[in-house]
Length: 181
Length: 239
Ligand code: SF4
Ligand code: SF4
Ligand code: FES
Image (cartoon, rainbow over all chains, first blue to last red; front, side, top):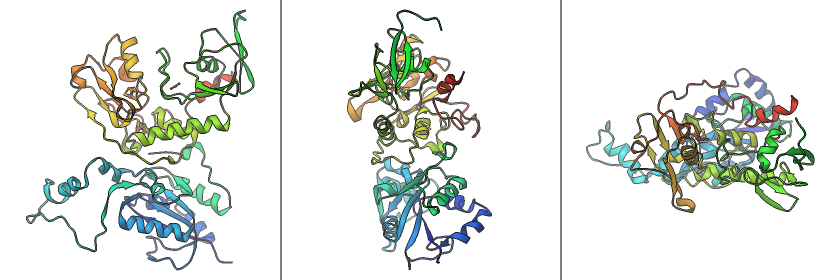
């Protein structure tokens, strides 16, 4: 019988949550006995070629590409988990939500004290995904089945959740593993 | 306990509890080792009754704030049905989406009553959309700052300053989504607030904090790292 597939994506986050995935240490050897990793930055598989049992999302949505990837995950995964504070509440990227987008771009590319940009051009190549006006958490874009908060969530949190799901049980974290920091 | 003739007998979740006339449901419950979740209530201060996290159902028919409702003979209080728990959880979720709570770098994290309430209730992510409101930070005071991004409008600072410090430092202005905490002056440094005041220590969240000593308690040694908020009250039962 083929193993269930797990896919992961890093949207608008810092990759810290993916580091936390790797932080399960040698337990990753037990994990690959029971699941196969499909589309993920860990193995660099870029497109879905088969249906996945579990999708794990790091980061919220700050641009149109994040939204497209998230929707793609929703379409291709049976269970979708938002993993980490950026995915569940916007996190540090959402700090820009109180500042108009133009001001953010001007500060980053024109006015910032360390910026050298004599032509005062804000990058606008067609290849660049358009930014959303506000960073949004995943559950505001697609239906999310489980949220695991934390910045990042601990490796034990992920371990606990994956084990529950693979055993066909609901995710019910113990008190010590629910953390928003 | 000395049996007083005037004692009031009522029930919480079907369990018989005794209290004294004039006591609120929350106070009588607490003496009996039953925790009613609360955020705006602070011992020794006039209850504000604004957060509604202490909501209970009485006689199976009406809901009220346990921190303001006095007990009466034969009262039947529901403190733990799924309906009540869902109500409270929804309220706490709204407090998160109505403010800007970045726990990952907040110096109150681990010692914050709002965060601890979310942990106790098992809130993983609010079901409501985030508002990301605009709010002001006032760091003018030499020893303290007020960050309105994290204020839950509980009035604990307002009433503690007035009732315990004898000072008029804080108040509210505006209504509905525009309601905010204001200070008696242009900015916090214009007020009489001092670092040693009771009001400086009354905030349940990280909205009023000292400037020095942030992150003093390491992760693992903070107030709510191991034991849920309220477990000290519940522990009284076993004695
Ligand atoms: S005040 Fe509490 S809930 Fe808000 S950010 Fe700080 S720790 Fe989190
Ligand atoms: S500043 Fe703190 S104590 Fe004062 S109303 Fe806001 S949350 Fe309550
Ligand atoms: S604790 Fe009763 S309303 Fe806030």
